[in-house]
Image (cartoon, rainbow, N blue to C red; front, side, top):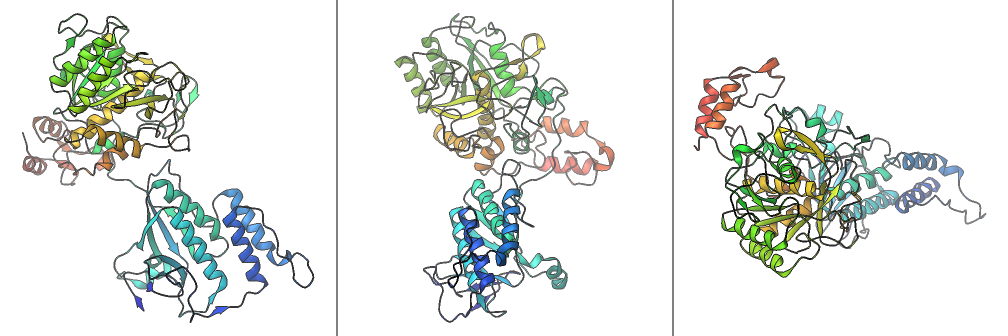
Length: 576
């Protein structure tokens, strides 16, 4: 019985039994020499081994001449890693768990008794050949092995112009959803291996993700910040890998941080740099026992704070990961060194004064029980803690407090996704972030490069600030799970002691929380529609630049002019 769920024909039952066997009642055409050649080629694509020709049973001679075209096509395909019309998009460019498949003409989706999907010619059009069944089984098994979850028609309706749709193939597209983006990419390659041999799929490509066009922030030194946006630029003579960054730009469409979130920076102090001075809260100096928090260690704490919190899109300096969260300075070293007990006191002080997240770009070799107890105290209070792995360069040598299970331990990588050699390694590592030649704030309103896991940790802390702004109930355990499950596996081996689960991916982490879309009037994406948004609207008042060629965020009704109508829409979202 056939049912039409959409333009693509879905056939219930068909030639596949619930055990995957060929059912009786469906006629198969005999296997001739051409079919044997194609079958052997298909099997060898499956195994990725050189083709071994069949031998004639009567003469024991390899039957090669009949298969030469298929062999040549196969070799060409394998050398190119993309066969015929099949497009294999890179997961580095498009993080998508959906694959678009354009079926060959007269191909339908057979649904077996267990709900499995098989791609086969429609039985009413012609008899099924053995190779049809072979194609179907290989493709079915490969898609399942890649993590296939569902397969549906792209169009849930019949096109109003069926002739045109049929002519260009719109009525033959299905979308297959997989459990991971890596599985989707693997499925595209699997389909590619079969396409040239006449399989049931003409084209396969990843269903790319995108969204509303966003402008780059106006910070003049953005090109030096490969961690924020890696275009392959030259950093200290090293050409980067495009896309080897923390992928924060699209996340800013969801949030740039809320002032409701407080991030404590346990470090050498923080200078009142113009990039974040307005968001500094009261602080504490543990060694001195005062509220003075001037940075006294070569701007270490100031640099760390700039990475996570420098204001973006303000026509000056650099852009941090998070532009809206408040920063709580807690000095826990005297100059550049100090005792673990000072860190423990700083943790407790920050927790008791309302910190939501704690950044510790610090390293201590001992890791005494007092420090462990303070970390446990913060964890039990629901405070998320991020710590630098350490700069010893040793294997199985993650430093405290990063080695404690309650913290999120961060390793350092460079602009080519390579492990920074001095970054400590070990099973405690959760994920990695840029820590080589990171450009950020310094004292006296300057900017400098610094290296270290101290620089990697605040990328993660800044990301958690965005996540906490969107999901106020985010707890330490969930935060860790989300960060690790969305990280980009840069070494291709799953979890490892050098980079943990991989490189931080902020957009993926934010989307994993399934946040509510921001209100249109929330122009600065801080979770509120207030006077700051009103001020941003006034700055853009009037016609949008270049006939709306540039992003005009305050044009809420899309008429290419910011005027009273847009102001009215903003006031509808007003929260104060």
